Amino acid sequence: MDELLDGVFEASVRLSAMAGDLGALERAKHVASVLEDHVSRGRGHGADVAGGARVRSLVEELAQTLERVHRVMGAGLEQALVELGQVRDAAERLRLVPARAVFTALERAARDAARALGKDVVFSATGGEQRLDAHVLAALRDALLHVVRNAVVHGVEAPAARRAADKPAAGRVTLDVERRGARVVFTCRDDGRGVDLAAVRRVAAGRGLVADPDELDHDAAVGLLLRGGVSTAAATTELAGRGIGLDVLRETVARLRGELDIRSESGRGTVVTVTVPVSLSSLPGLVVEAGGVTVTLPLAAVRETLRAATQDIATHGDGASVTWGGHAVPYAPLAALVAPAEVAAPVRALVVVGGLSDGVAALGVTRLVGTVDVVVRPLPAVVEAAPIIAGASLDAQGDPQLVLDPEALVRAVARLGPRPLAASPARPLPILVVDDSLTTRMLEQSVLTSAGYDVDLATCGEEGLEMLRARRYGLALVDVEMPGIDGFEVVAQVRADPDLRAIPVILVTSRAADEDLRRGREAGADDYIVKGEFDQERLLRRIRELMR
Image (cartoon, rainbow, N blue to C red; front, top):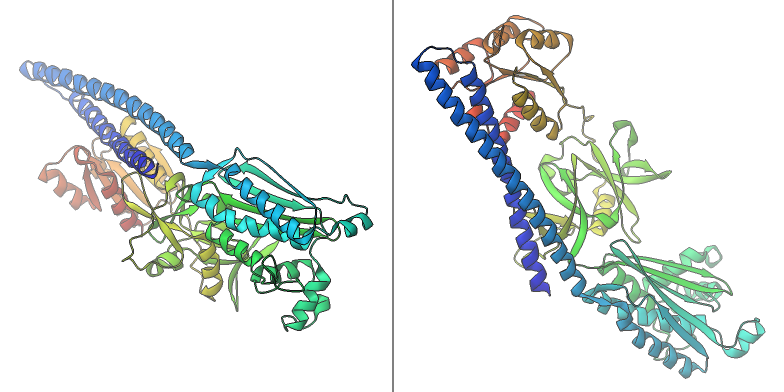
């Protein structure tokens, strides 16, 4: 089943990469549109007119063909991805094991413990149809055995004591299994005496674990029991006295990247709640960018995402923190953990991640990319990875992408200590696109807004100059061939104006002759991009360089 699932995910990655090739078709459609506009503007007579009509006909045929291929290929890929997703989901379900597989062992453990202690206990379980990863269930089975034994040994009273407390002679231990999204919740309840706070205080005082046992409340007592080595049993037996039961539970839950909660009420019983992911190999994640590095955080550990505001981040002697949920939460830029050399990268969003006993932490990131289902693969043994790295997954292009461990992240933020905060993440100045072609304007606007820029549009050189004088821009993309003032003249006027001369200008045109390139340089353009050779990544890289 694991091999089947790996194969399905590999096919999904390949299809996603093919879907990215649709962008090349989109660019080809744009080139055809630009060429058609250029031919339509041509002037001539006789043979030139006939030749122009022939070229125009070929261009129209090319555009129609590209449109048809784009539509058919896009629909086919979309349908293939949907169907492959259904196969992947089916493979996921097949490799999962129903929770009822551990019920028999737990019932036997409760019965044997009760018989050995002369107690009468009834065990019952519900939710056995819930399915989860066999590795998760196998690890959880051993931890739940300790929970059930603890309920019988330390929780449920002897029959005489239960009758004296006006309880049924037979104690009850129940296990309820419930699915909540991508996680499964195991809730074990007993109707016994609850955590014996007085006994825990005696043991803690006897071992010197606390300065004043009377100040030990319920939560602190549970914390001591979870640390291991602490038991309230009067003697060590096969069932109790070694103080390892809850310690095993805590370690197991931490290893499974789950959550543990213990609630107890004196005389009414104890409730142990364990929340674990359905699968350790496949999980939903939040993809973020920090310091030029793209990483994935397990979505189940993300408590909230917020817009970053400098005034919300406070520095103090122990480091930095943000206010979240009415409390101060430790803060660090994620770049400081995954890309220290890029720690000065702007922080535009905060991601609050939660651990188990280690609490929560806020991470500053450059960008929230989106959510995705990933298959987490272990790193090769020869790779020395930082503790915050849980593994790697493959992105849509088949490239490895790090998956981070939220538990280790919380601890790492706490250890990071005081750091100077990066300067306020000022939003980039807007970009002005000046082009008389609707297709070109829409294409460039789409590319720029996807990269996080605000974009204004002008349809001619005159309008572009008016907008440049009315608002502060970080850069202008200007077409060369426009009615009225052409792009060369726009650049010349920008460079002649003391208020505008510092604005970077990139000329975008279908003219690639050396003479045109020379005219662009002489006018003062910072770069010259030919539409027929349009490269989105090069354009964005050049824009970042000029706006820096």
